[in-house]
Amino acid sequence: METSVSPQTAGVKACCVKAAPPAPTEPLATRLLGLWSRIDKPLLSIAAIIVFIAVALPGQLQASLAATGTSLLNIAPWIALSVALAAYATASRADRLVAQAFTGNPVRMIAVAALVGAASPFCSCGVVPIIAGLLMAGVPLAPVMAFWMSSPLMDPTMFIMTAASLGLEFAVVKTVAAVVIGLFAGGAVHLLARYNIAVDMLRQGPVKKCCSKKKAADSAPEWKFWQSAQSRTAFWESVRSNGWFLLRWMTIAFLLESLMTVFLPAEKVTAWLGQGPTAIPLAIAIGIPSYLNGYAALPLVSGLIGLGMSKAVALAFLVGGGVTSVPAMIAVWALVKPRGFALYMALAVAGSFLVSYAYVLYLAVA
Image: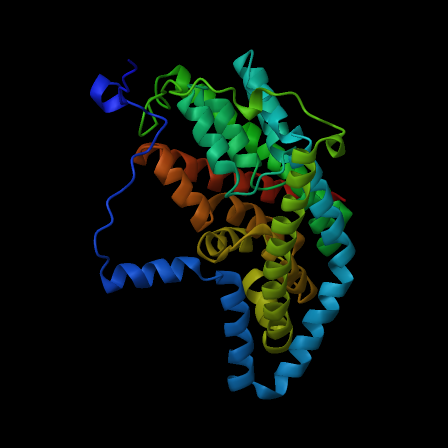
């Protein structure tokens, strides 16, 4: 006669199966928080901006809507191209090649990780699970830091959107800056680790995977993804999610740009974030609390450059904000100890200064 023995009866800890949480009566505050979490924040922001213009600046509403629509139409081909490339990387599993950057000699790992980070299709949010997995698997912090710094700053989608908004030269400069910051941060951590300074940074040490299921990262890329129904589904899901993401954030950016170009005097922009290298520290400082994401920042920075802001200052804002934005800082704080967080922030700010002032010198001799 067969008997059924549950994991609890046998005393086996099923680490891959989560027990159903209890369902107590939720207080009103909890229900309100749950409702808030389900609201589409970008759409809410778009509605709030339009309502603000309609109430506070009714004469500007039609012009702002027209300018936003025109800007979206002009940049639509670039959005379509970037979305298609990102979807192909996902459906073909080309993004899984990133794992190969973290094997071999430490110096080689740092260099490859910085390059792969700048080429991989991960934003500051999408890179978090990758970083967490690498750290928890025991990968040295130096190459992880190189990847961590360069990945949020540039990817194929970001390169296309940057070239469309700020020109091909600026897109190349920002790509080089992303790699240089990755190399700088990874190299600094590697040197500090040799003196037992940058060690034991994780809030939780490396752990063994409790499930033996083969990870997707172990599978080879499927370049002809259209031959698989599952990969085709992944492609169209990526197109839908990335396209919707870009459409909402670019709409927000263009609405704000329409107000900025009308009401922000050019002389104030030049005075605050103008031509001199002394504006670079201010641009980096402003980028920490105000930087939302790289895509939304591009049209705004383009408008500021049109109002007189130096390209080197623009680079400082985009790079400094990209690696020290609030979402990025929250992710870092969740994964490493306070001194690891302090190290990340110090390297991010120092790297931003490095590439920004290097661009100042480049512009001076070009």
